[in-house]
Image (cartoon, rainbow, N blue to C red; front, side):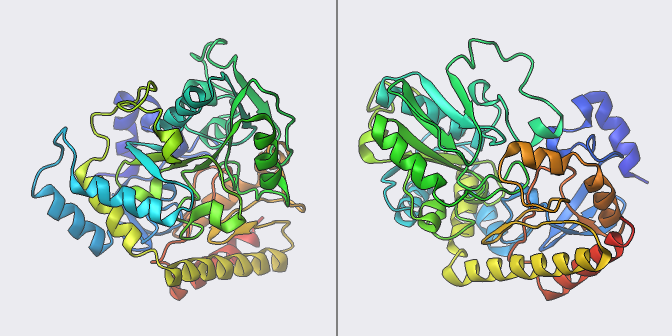
Length: 418
């Protein structure tokens, strides 16, 4: 019989650390990962047949739940005609139109294959459009693993206890300025772009302080810098128009991923028609990708977006709110200090008394040793959370009353052991 243990032993022999993304490793929580055999709705099943209520949901893409019939049908239909052409397709146009229709101020998009690629390309676009070199990012924000943005990153970088990455040269980050999250930095005319997660979702979940995003907008306007919202996580999850609609602050450049691919690899970056006119073949900023706008991914993305109506967002938010309240009650009853920051349907968890407001306070809460015990207690009871304290929880449209009730019951049991 194939087991999680035997697969992990085989994986470690041929895959570094046995995983193809460090966030899947159990290094910060201990133990070894489970290997998923299939997913269905709010559940995943491992190769040993154990079922988990899944709040990882592929770290965000599976907003409809796993193996949604409409997405599977769209993928099957697209695959029956071919998987990649190296030529434009109608669905590339359709999903670009859909995204621009949803996001006010975004007039054009370029499709890519990942969130990392979207952020990397958007930075290049910003530098080309402004003729400036320097960029600003915020400690604990994660914008993928491109060299210039990997310093002081959240998610797997923080989870591994790293400040950056070996192999990234001093020259690669010489033009990157790191500022504390939720503090508006003073800029000058050397700054091309300020990159920010409008809701920081890679250091647990840290909401923007009142006035923070508005302050960034005003400061960028003052010096002629561009403001970039990295919406790889928040895009089309918070609401129909993303963070700009949610907070009422419009950036100059957007990055997307996760939800727009319907579970398949896809990212995108967008801006005004004027800014995007700097991209080749119109302008001198070069960017390309063999699999950009892949027909399977665009079909899946269109199917996902078609289900994300106003009612769907209300349901997602209600589910996250009910989960938040139930977990808080369970922790309080057990005398466990915990906060669960929530922004719409996005939910975080910190074992601390005070809600973190930046990376330093998030790190102190994440590294206090409580999360690994909670994680394994939940996993033993059939609830799958991310194997690291720097990730958000992702309730999906498939999580119903029964799954939320079972999760809250498990939280109460585990909390009593903490």
